[in-house]
Structures are given as C-alpha cells and as structure tokens.
Amino acid sequence: MKKKKKKKKKRKKKKKKKKKKKKKKKKKKKKKKKKKKKKKKKEEEQEEEEEEEEEEEEEEEKEEEQEEEEEECLCPEAQALRAWVSISLLLAYHLLSSRRLVLSSPSLLATSSNIPLPPPPTPPPRVWPGTMEGR
Picture (cartoon, helix red, strand yellow):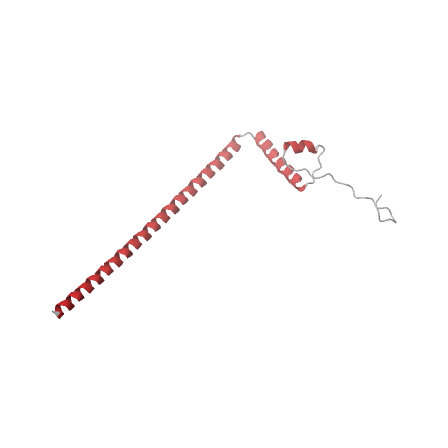
C-alpha cells in the first residue's frame, strides 16, 4: 500500500512540474509574439514616416520646378524688374533694421508697415567753457 501511495505522489508531482513547464512555455511564446507585433508596428510606422517625408520632398521639388519655370517664362525685362524689386526690398529692410535710414515722412512708413519708429534724436546739452552746467 505504501509503495502505491508513494508512486501516486511521485506521479502527481511530475504532472504538476509538467504543467508548470507548459505554462512557462506558453508565457514565453506569448511574450515573443507580443515583441514581434511591437517590432512590426514600429517598422510599419517608420516606413509610413519615410514615405510621408519622401512625398513632402517631392512636392517641394515640384514647387521649386514650377517657380523656375515661371521665372523662365517671363520676358527678360520682367525678370530684371522682379530682381530689382526684390533687391530694393531687401536693402530697405536692412537699412530699416539697422536704423540708418532717415525718412522725410516717417508717418507714411508707419502706416504702410508695422515697424516701430525710432525716437527722434535729441541734441546733447551745450556746455560752456568754464562752467559745468548746460545753458
């Protein structure tokens, strides 16, 4: 009787161990599957982002080509006028930003753009020889 009981106990222990091993294997498989899914998702997202970037670059290139074609279509006089206007605008902006430009009518400029005007210059007080105070 005792031998039978011992054998039964051993069998039960073996079965339990097998079940535990199976459970562990299943968990490992699930983890691997999850990792694979995550990797696939990441790869797909990266591919989508790359495709979007390529499309944006293509669009930008097309726009640049269209601008170049438009410039080529203009007659040489129009091209020269366009270049002169762009250069003069850049020069005016530079002079205004450095505040070297003295305008005859600053109110006109103030109404045409939102650039704040510099305060009018004030002359320094005169100092007479022999005195430290200004008159």
